[in-house]
Image (cartoon, rainbow, N blue to C red; front, side, top):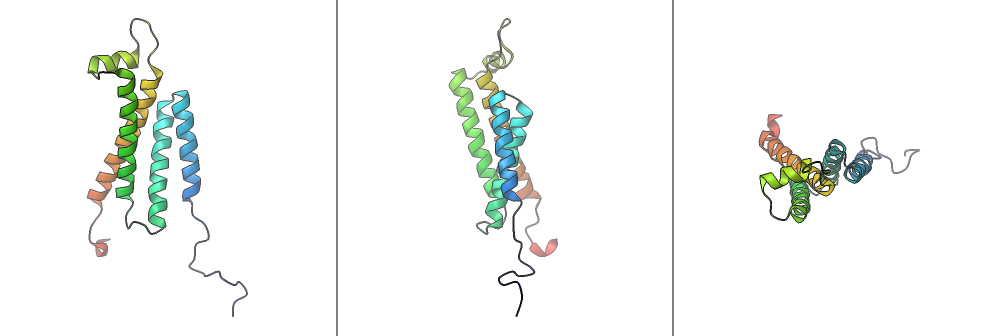
Length: 142
């Protein structure tokens, strides 16, 4: 009989993922609200990766790449909706004008924020596809 009831040697008591979810979500909120593109993109990537890690750790999926790809697609679509909602018709010249400002005007901050969300989604989706492709399918290969 053990002195510590219910605690097994091989059982991990806590998971690191909730900390990364909180940090990623907070960083992305600050980056999107203030308009700091690297902070917004990085925070959204940490958030999406952490959610995929939690889902895998909970045993709902075997590998996190599908969840990461789905979250990336959701972010990319949301970012594109924001950009198209502000830009109206989306042409390259119109987008450059919105991002850089026209004739001394300030750039459109909402478009910049939408593009940062789109970029994070595109990076997350591309990373999930690359990881799924690079990962060996034979579990004995590793």
